[in-house]
Length: 601
Image 1 (cartoon, rainbow, N blue to C red):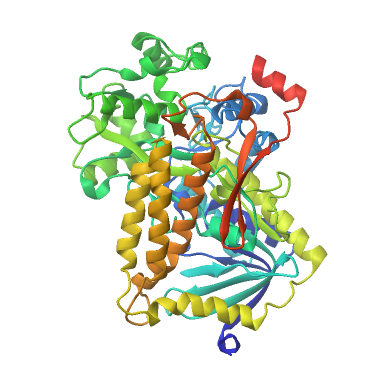
Image 2 (image 1 turned 120 degrees about the vertical axis):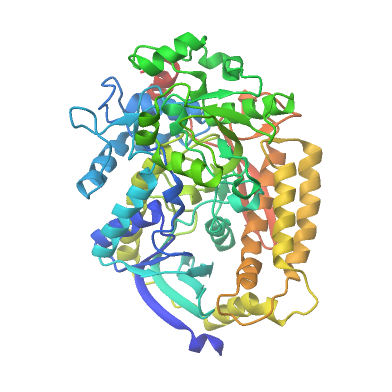
């Protein structure tokens, strides 16, 4: 029996994913006395959290003293098009300030105001300047602090290790079966509780800000374990990614550029965002360039925000419309110009990463000339359905946090809310996982037959001959999703995508690789296809089901939002070999919170 030769480790809590959410969960579980194992697909410190540049949203009130959790909650719900899990949005707004101060106490070096308080910058959809930041390298600082804290908390780290299944034994999650990418050797982690923190699904699209790890692993591990997923139709396309040269297309351009005064212009030099302010936001945003510039140079608490700081879904769709109507740049984007609004020293101080990124990758000096940008696949609001208080999924002992967890951001995430989300719910997931493991005790042993079946399935591509090239299948998948499940969708395109995904699933089952198991990228890609194809199908099926436009989901054949489904979710669940979708009503908003959102804080 092959399972007898597999390396094993025993933990109270296993955390899969070492980004901000996974690290914070591991730290909290260890603080509660749990023995914790942390598994990361890449190297420690290589987390995608590093790419979150602009800041972490928290109503600290250090720049605008009128800010408080109620305003932050209202902004999050409005930005999410009222589709958010209201309790998660409330917890997030209330606890984010404490998590930022805690991170500072652990050594985070945030930018300061002249009188020494944590500085905060404005961002799209936020009423006040609310993002605590470290230049435009906030995520990098967060990971530096969290990984140092985790290692010194005694968390055992397993790097370059990919999880292929989360066994469920006796009705509860029992650990994780994985393989080391360097050697191809399998390893079984036995644990009383499992936390999924693997990030998003962006590598299913051609143009994305996401790195290679973002193949939807956590979403599919939960799905195959029997958990429910929600809101998979809501994918965020960040308005500003690089578009030229082709080799860097999709790389993120932080919203901090617009937060510090950058403006969007089409090829005619028109500042076009004034044309796209939705009716519900008319009173919040500037109507003239003069009024918008006053916000940049004067008291931001007293002037209306520039339209460049509308929510990401609105800005991304505005850019697409400008390009479609022939007002785009030669390389298929628009211009983002901060040089016209800010001096060179200010730009280099506030946006050092952006300055070097464009200088080195595009040969553009952003202190002198505009950036060429366009939308890029960035974030999925959907994910595993979790309990707001504990982050536990519908499978006992299986928790999900960060981009793997659904509900917090509704139909559209506000910039900056992801970093504070990681801290708030990472802590709660780690605490709850440690408590679950302590109360329920060690998980039942994973049957050897189940381990053998999973490892044999993973090794199957080596046994095939004259099969499909896994890289070709992945490229075809990305093309399908880019064309049919992008910023704007319609029924014919989504139905065509489903047909093509079925063919690609057949091709993936015939994928073949050669060589050994040691650092074999073809094999890694062949295994990633299972996750990529599953999350692609979830997205398309949920998008077909939702016959309206809301936030990150736009149907050209149903351009308006339907008030009848405002608090209705599409739930995805596995039924044998079949993927099912159904509608489910969310709990009603408490009267006091509904009044707060409607009337303002």
